Amino acid sequence: MHKISYTSGTSDVPLLGATIGDKFDEIVEQFPNKEALIVHHQNIRWTYRRLQEEVDKCAKALLACGLEKGDRTGIWSPNRSEWTVMQFATAKVGIILVNINPSYRVHELEYALNQSGCKMLVTADTFKTSDYESMILELAPELMSASFGALNSAKLPELKMVVSLADVPKKGLLSWKNLMARASESTDEALAERQTTLAFDDAINIQYTSGTTGYPKGATLSHHNILNNGYFVARTMNFTDQDRLIIPVPLYHCFGMVMGNLGCMTHGATMIYASEGFEPQAVLEAAEREKATAIYGVPTMFIAELEHPDFEKFDLSSLRTGIMAGSPCPIEVMKKVQSLMNMSEVQVAYGMTETSPVSTQTKVGAPLQKQVSTVGQIHPHLEVKIIDEQTGQVVPIGEPGELCTRGYSVMLGYWNDDERTRESIDAARWMHTGDLATMDEEGYINIVGRIKDMIIRGGENIYPREIEEFLYTHPKISDVQVIGIPDAKYGEIVMAWVKLKEGEQSTAEELQEFCTGKIAHFKVPAHFKFTQDFPMTVTGKIRKVEMRHISTKELNLEATANIETA
Image (cartoon, rainbow, N blue to C red; front, side, top):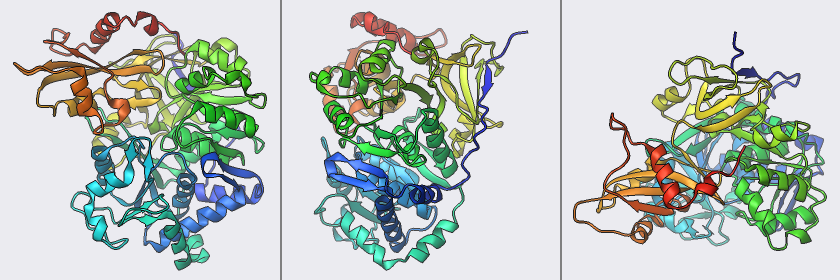
């Protein structure tokens, strides 16, 4: 009888049965004078006690704004101290934090705010090419004449107040300083009382993942989901209060706010933000200056650090561990990180937003080949099985099939979307990932492909349908199919095959211009191919695998496609 592809993560360490706020307060009492948060670009260096003061002040301000348990507040900002303060403050008062991708443009912002029903938005002023204040005022010009808390917007009917992180915000927006000043309108007793009404199974976070239907889905996560996942990710790395982690990955993503912030908090370790967005030099400088013990990143980040012209000048001797995740990890890059960056215990993790995020992780002491060529073994308290997509039966060891995972980490569901929740989570609470994987005799998992045609560009999940839906709005386009093609830097980049309407002419430059500023920059196709038809099966289904093969050949990307990854 064949051994089947199923494994469960046994552990003598129990799950944390606490809310994020209660666990945070417990850690503050344990490590009051340990450095909790270091933000270089804001000149911030806070102990756990100081961070708690900021968090409690913000939590009381949110109460003073009239926000109730279960209300939604959006955060639209790159990595800053205010992001983290909001993360812990909302958790303390039971407000569901809605993470909004800093790359979103007006169309995507409008959808996220309305779909989640945000009452409040906290926004940065600008970042890179984004002018957040202008975009929110474009959507809700009524802010200019509304008093704070009394917005009545035609396009954003649920939104009542907007807070800006600018020192001097545009008219209609409340400054962060003035929000924090409202803490005096509430009391410590009111905060404590609200905190006692919360349960660890309550929803506390909504994170948008690109939707195959063209619209993002709001993965709804509980305290229990993300607190435990952050805890066990860091525990698998042997984290203690002595660890100092550089978090260059975005906080809006599970990698930053769960594996980073919550992983550090649950161990009394130090969170370090070297810059607002990823900058390789800032990471290397921070590693040396702060004597960091760990760095997180997607493979493209580690490649940029290794290729920095002054790489050899930095003292990285304090480094020990870290995580490379978000997209397949090239084996050669993994080996260089282990040797040249002194991160001998660096690990690979695999998961998805819907599973809080991590399901599997490599372990310290695993054979080198397993560390660099798999995504590790099952996490504590979780289960994984690999099934035949057609029959639903668990496949024998070594055979590919769809990876499914079950346990505390599986999301509550997609916000206000029961239909798509049922499509992803079956009656037995198995989360169907859409990823093709194999399992070996020791339970090591290899991701071998994707059932769905998702593109992973440098850690950003992109669903072609969303881009196709947008390109269909171009007056010259008759039909369009979007695929991912190999790229040495990002793993994959976006390419669009376009069929123009009869008699029309266009160029790649024209179509890129059409996309710029309307959809996030990482979704804008890097290549366009103009065609009269698409490869199809006999039943009329588009063969995207064949399209990818043709494009890879035409663009001379065969060598890039053959780079070995975990």
